[in-house]
Length: 200
Image (cartoon, rainbow, N blue to C red; front, side, top):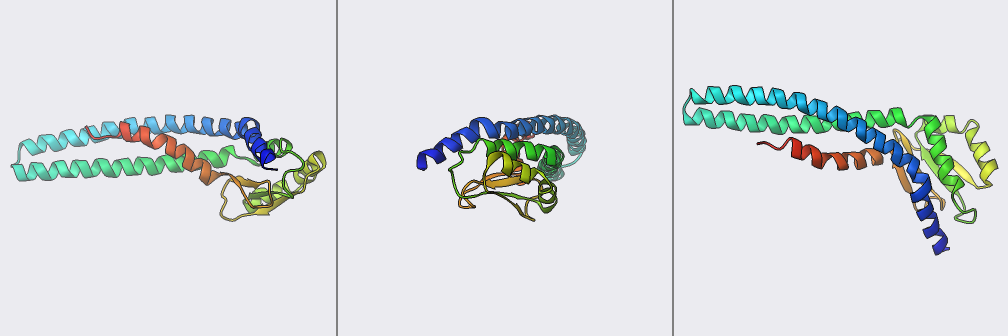
């Protein structure tokens, strides 16, 4: 049984998850493009503000110059935080647009069809209530008929997009929710943003 679970996990990683990774890669690429554009515009504005601050500082005493430099640093910190927050909003929006009911049905079907029949007693898929209702209108019966597996769709108000799947009646899960994917993509992008937005 333990070997079958290991085989299942390996198979999911090499076959089923590829669909989700392709989606995530596209969203990441789009988000990077948007982020670079926002960053470029923000850097130009930040540079203008810093230049104005430096020109003013030259005309004032040391105390005023120090205050302006601190204001510039504070502004860059605030700007960095706003850009990161904007990027996270863009990623979540793109995920909601990308993870349509049609895409979810393809990914879920692929994962379940590649699962050994004798693994676990029940496959549980948790989705937001709207997606659950749509998938329950025909997709579920067809998938059960094709796979001969005990599959249950559950509503989860905490899931905005994507899904969480369990192959052992909820004892363990694989999280493909929008939040989990967003956290993963943001985690990949934040270090790069940090380098770009590092004060010079």
